[in-house]
Length: 70
Image 1: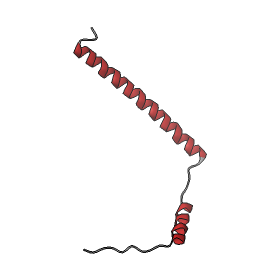
Image 2 (image 1 turned 45 degrees about the vertical axis):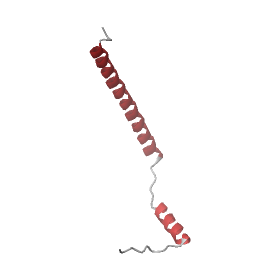
Image 3 (image 1 turned 120 degrees about the vertical axis):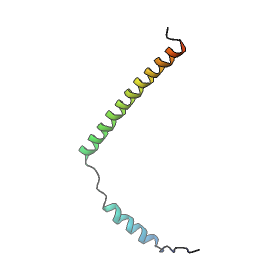
Image 4 (image 1 turned 30 degrees about the horizontal axis):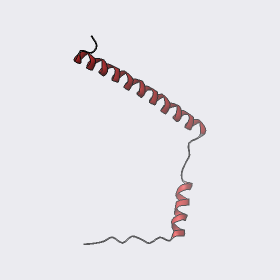
């Protein structure tokens, strides 16, 4: 059985590399964040309405099949 040896990295080197990678991150602007948040809220509301309607249709169907809606 072959085992792959991992390169040992010092704690200092690890944090240095973390800082280098973090410097590459591009954060969204305030406008982009607000647009994304608005879109997420709209999609959540649409999904909630969709499932509310589907749930009601199924409930009506079940009541009809079981004779409770007459």
